Length: 175
Image (cartoon, rainbow, N blue to C red; front, side, top):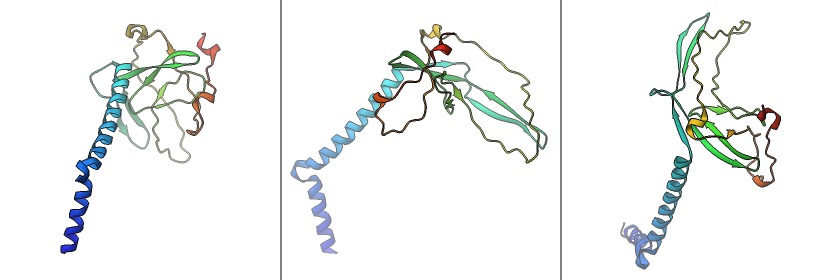
């Protein structure tokens, strides 16, 4: 037991010894990681614009679910606008919390909500939209004069991004 305490004391002396150099290096590295995270968060917070539509949270609620039907209600409360600069010009990305993006390469990258539902074998599917409330919001009122960012294909992370082709459907965007 005495040997264990002696070894433990040597480890403490090693970490704190030499004027605490090792602990200072560890603390300094932790501080650098903290500063980096703060910089990234601050950079995102300054460049994105939040558009609030309602005070409620984004939601997808099941109103009723029985053998014959499934009724759902979806509410979009807010989204973020993030400017992006590319070789083809400046664009804006629409970001909605909890949504994915579509992959129609070269066409506008729009947020999508994807959910799986079980459908019994042999059942016929009929989709009925009973009511839709929409609100057209001109992006110019938020100081945005650019087009929506075009969807890009999924790419491997090992490939250098400078060598990748930027897909942009110019005829679609000129409409």
